[in-house]
Amino acid sequence: MYGYAQLPHEASVKVSPFHVAVSRDELQDFHDLIRLSKLGPRTYENSSANGRYGVTYEWMSEAKAYWESRFDWSAVEDRINEHPNFKANILDDDGSAYAIHFTGLFSQRKDAIPLMCIHGWPGSFLEFTGILSRLKQNYSPQDLPYHIVIPSLPGYAFSDSPPLDKNWTLQDSGRLLHKLMVGLGFGDGYALQGGDIGSYTARIMAATYDSCKVLHLNFCVMTCPAELENSALEEYEREGLKRADRFGKLGTAYAVEHATRTATIGFVLSSSPLALLAWYVELAHAAKALIDTMARIGEKFLAWTDQSPSMDEILSSVTLYWLTQTFPRAIYPYRQEIIDEPFGPIIDAKCRKALQEGPRKYMVHPDPKFYCHQPMGYSYFPCEIAPVPKSWAATTGNLVWFNRHDKGGHFAALEQPEALLSDIEEFLKQAWR
Image 1 (cartoon, rainbow, N blue to C red):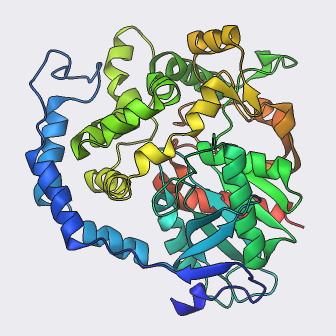
Image 2 (image 1 turned 120 degrees about the horizontal axis):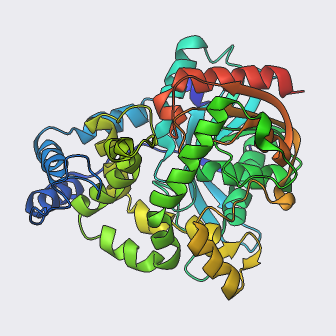
């Protein structure tokens, strides 16, 4: 692994190797909490076979038993530590210092392309470990075409939290990630890739910093551009917009809670691992759970993913969130996404309208301030929660590359690592100069 862990010689930022090892005492406390936590009584709502009202009692009961007796956190640590991990000491413009965690692979090639891939919520750097493994299978440190950096956003996993005295925004997170890339010696140019909230952060960085030379997205949620005529949309694009509409109406209550009662939900989900699991699973499966209900009235509602993640995948992510106290530290982007515009508060009437029409009314992607003038790529995965047509995405930047997939959903790096990696590589071959 040493070859992949060798930082470029131009690196100037203070970087320390990082190894994940949760103490036995912490793990024992964690297991005790799972064992002692009650599920609550059976109800009409949690007994619904199709999960119309949320996660079911049966699923939670099975998950609790698996978590207690079969889940192996040490295997997750091995999966993380299989790749180089670091913490970088990043000095912000006001002199504040932040420890930012990142994993990745470094090349010994002088012409390697610096590439940062940014996760979202409820994700983490874990989503990209499959891509890292495939890169190690395909390339040695001597011929790896990329320096790939997978950070944990501020507030997530092993990165420091946003400060207590500042209304932290995605611009702030993007600034720290830019400083990380510059500090690693990539100030002359780097590529960005992002999904979910990572796509917002990446776009903001692309619009703000000349060092970003190309941008690839697998999430570009937005409303219909006023100047477009949608009669020419293909059938798969129309179906995608129907899914986006259903999600906007039935799947976004969590986002309003995150944005308007950020502190409250943070305390609630910090009280019990089972509470965190239920919230996480509700979000990961809410759309899928409604398939049968929607089918009865002739409608379709696809999930965030092509197929349900395995129990181990779900519990790995939730356990990481619990052990690092990620949830209350990480939902700050929703305040900006729903209540605040990127550079200021929305007036009361506008805020009320936003909450009435759905929390995805005010997005980063269609904002003219964040138009991407650099070459941009967009990967369309059919089971994305809110896939948008190619023509829509093209209004948000200099779209030079597009690929449509037959399978895959919101967590593309986790679900389809080979497909997403192939897209990134093909895009970079065409767009990087």
